[in-house]
Amino acid sequence: MNNRMQAAQFVAKGYYNQNPRLLEHVLSKPPDRVKYTNLNVRRKDFEEIQQIGIESGILLKRLDFLEYADPSFVPPTATIEGFTFEDAASKAAASEKGLIR
Image (cartoon, rainbow, N blue to C red; front, top):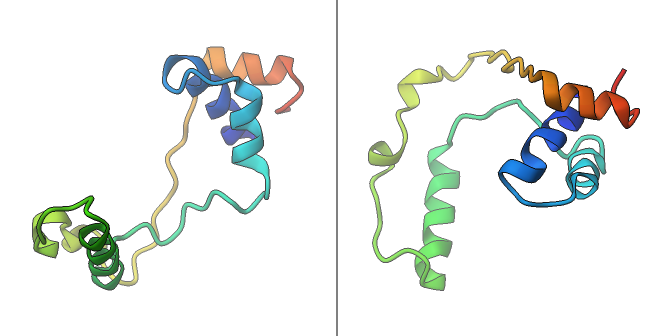
């Protein structure tokens, strides 16, 4: 949770132009909202999203899955370690607000 609060401080102004409190809420309620597991793109999910995009007019044509994703980077049984995010300014801002320890 500490990384999320730090990330909220970091992206609030420079990227999203939002009040950090909004991002703090979105990233923490419910606590399991943000997950970092099973991040590989599944062909079935890709095709479903693509179909919805075509039906809604957002996408104009179909794209072959392998033009979009390279599944060779993520073997089916792979365990992926999360990225460690550190930024002194956003960490200090989150600490000052009592959001992280």
